Length: 156
Image (cartoon, helix red, strand yellow):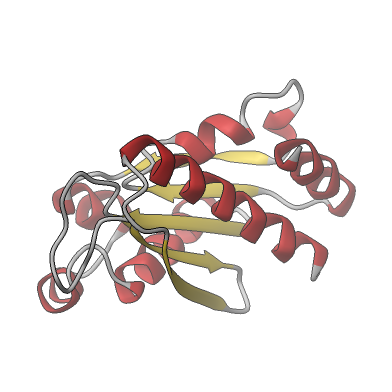
């Protein structure tokens, strides 16, 4: 199970983790805090569903939101970097996407932007999970974010 591997490897490496989530509504934070002893590695998380909270809690620049929209790699990057800076954690993951129903021609249902930030670099990516339905997109995004965290731990 990913969350067990993450917690064990983060503990062994002395790393701390945090999250900044939009469309998953705290699902990654819930997974990371689900196991006993998780407080040794999980610093906390932000659920910033609204643009106002993305700005106020994570410091996402209004210009990024206006120019790119909340579901974009630049905003995901700013979310992850904001969470990292505000918690002092070693690794931050962020998620912003369109779980559905709905979407648009330019940002279809199932599109999710991710960022993973450390003190040395921030990587972003976009995954189109397609219109799997809201619950399935959210679960797929949670699992993808957890895999990104584990990959980052293993690369250190």
